[in-house]
Length: 333
Ligand code: SAM
Image (cartoon, rainbow, N blue to C red):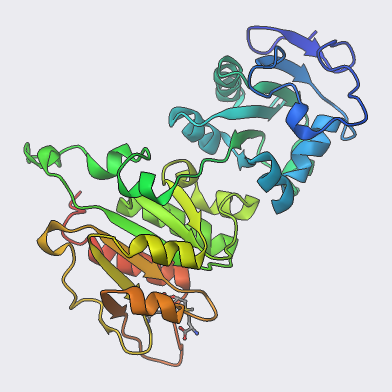
């Protein structure tokens, strides 16, 4: 028996809750599924051949993540962020004897209470699940959270602090200000590192929701989640095909601002949040820029002036510049 967190504790070989699966055993039947009596269990696993570990390793592949609607968050900071923001954790895996032992134990205890299967593993298993040598010594497997565009636009997706931030020092009334909201749409973003960086930046700038349009990289890919540094849990996400998006933003009551290298206005000259209206900022694909139909749908087009030989800016960099210009007057602290 292993003593880690309070509750049911068992060894890999001894536990009856983890008897050999039937031939048709699939990931979704595994013990941490909500409602399964084995949820909220602690288990020690030492073998890479363990079927649960095989399944967790498979989450590096998009098709498995999509099928299971799960993703891996690596490191204590991300795991705590996910728990803190109320995301549903299914598995918590941590390595024995790690430096942040106490905190890892605390995260394990919280995950256990939340109904997750807690797995005590070793460095070899952590490396296998995260597909890298210098793996973090704690990972959480969370449910993917997607919203409909209507939910996001109507403020029914949790993004509490973007719209009701605490008052800056010395300004008691600021908390009462109702801010018009800023949404971000990405047209066919391909690079998961770009996508993760954009999610992190969007979080910092107070974006109320991120729409992924068309065939995009997955925000839940290992590389994307790493690049978000925890913001994956903070920004409501939705995804739509291009025709769906075009149809839905037809009735968007605010400004629709596209970024366009071939003839937009200087981004510093555009009025933002005019008449207190919400903004939907749209960024283009890394290779092809903004689709023509999206260009047509915009109420204004913005261009960031450039000099030198670069023909464009990196997508994540230009998104950061745009978001911070749009929020210039409201990010005061
Ligand atoms: N070859 C593409 C083109 O001609 O549009 C370049 C795409 S650029 C790498 C990817 C996206 O980043 C653009 O669609 C736009 O959203 C944004 N972007 C990059 N540089 C920009 C600039 N100088 N001004 C405005 N947006 C820019």
